[in-house]
Length: 387
Image 1 (cartoon, helix red, strand yellow):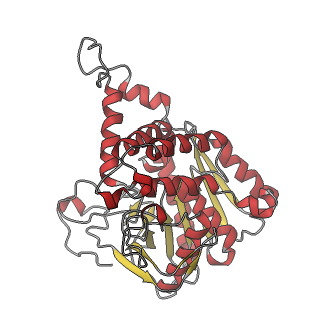
Image 2 (cartoon, one colour):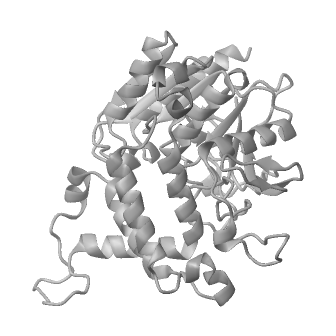
Image 3 (cartoon, helix red, strand yellow):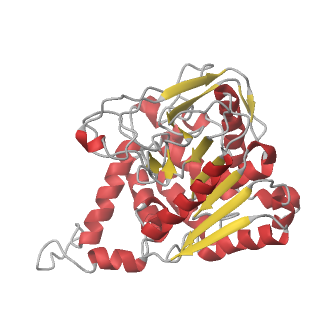
């Protein structure tokens, strides 16, 4: 991937600058957990920093439900916003690209360049749509392993992610114990709670019952299930925020001084959520949303070990870093401590940090000096191992 040497002034400080994604094609069939096989697939990838001569400074960043390969930097000089974790990744940042070779990718089944429902099925020459197979976190790890082989990386210095990305880091550590030295699992859980599964199903039902869904083949009809996707995102977005943070930001602030006595947007929080829903419907694919939420539901690495999480983490050889946020009720600190307890019971090296935050689940994406300092310190220790 090319990174321009000359950067505009706004990119000059601690930014990886202008970055260009690269698409990798894999012709080796990928056997999926559901028994199906993808004869070939593509992954959209961005990299930052330089792979050293020993090839031991590579870091894989796994994205959450609506994330993608664009982790840091800008795609053009006119971009308004950088990659989704730009505050974490870059020269001199907590994940320092002067020291590490950072790899971000769009997961299989996504809608930002990797093979997924929007891709053309080579057999039918039509978009896959609902025919794209359901994939799991295990499948993602297997596809990412193939990417590592393509890049010449025999072992990751670390695999890191928040939320669904943290689940991938945990699955990597269990399934490929010799392939990574550190796993950073942030605002995540060893499996979804019943409440989380329920939230996901309500979101999926909003999409599945949209009249423009067309059984998942809306693209062939030149339609989009915007209403369903918009509602799914609005509900999901509420769960990513904390009540205190939401209250401080919006309160009962109204758009006008008087009640309008109708069902249009009157409160500021309504306007905010509707805007977020509309923006998401323009940027994300409904089938990919269905697929990603189902991968979340299915994630349960202990299932392969008779439901025993301690047995599951006994496979881990990596050192583990876990972080949780006090106001995150979607992936509560209790779920992080559940993983922590299992790792301690299995006598595995683990570091846990419980952070105070009013930003809910989204805290793992935001600027927080204590959080970012903890990540910086941990990666400084990893960097010492590279010498």
